[in-house]
Image (cartoon, rainbow, N blue to C red; front, side):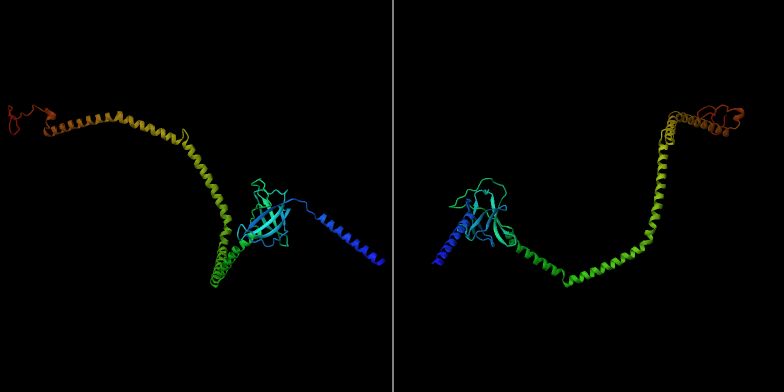
Length: 310
């Protein structure tokens, strides 16, 4: 009988301890946080997201996923219902994305807000308001994967075309031509070595020549300045030219008219001298006896057709 009594006592103690542990677990896991229901609808793939997954607001846990199903309001969309702490700043501009957690690949809901609106999104558990669900990084990668694959395929086709036998032959020809051109350049370089060696001496001679040209240029400039100075040769030459012009003008205005008169007088004297010479030739005795009376003309007394006086 005692063994049965001890077994009953031990069993009751175990039951009591189990009940206490269950109550402690319930007390420790109790959740007094008030949450509001929100919904999200998307046509994107949400693989990796499971019920009871975390909901984070900029990395801070604020709720969990309550339900994942199909949207009856928008055919073909997936409906996600979440419960979010009332203390979370959910506004009308808040949006959600599906993110991946670490290396496990488990998905969670990431909330964010660009601050476009400060108006709080009013909760309603009977008809939960909807938060926009935008494509996440994984969705963008999935969408871009096809484009990336197409581009990779095009790049592969172009690479195959570039590495065709004809192009390889053309590349070999080009390489050969480049090699020949390099050899020609080396030969030209070797031929230019003597010329290059003389360049320093030529440069020095050119410098000396340039200095001599500069000195000559300075001397020419100095000579030009001296020639153009006031009282210099060019100034005196200009003054002499002006004086010569004035003398020519005076000669033209005063001397030339007088020379004209003298020339006229000389011409008259020459004509008179010519007549005198002619008269002497006709009547030489006039130098001794004079000219005598003039010969009578026709109709005058003593006129004779033979020219003799009667």
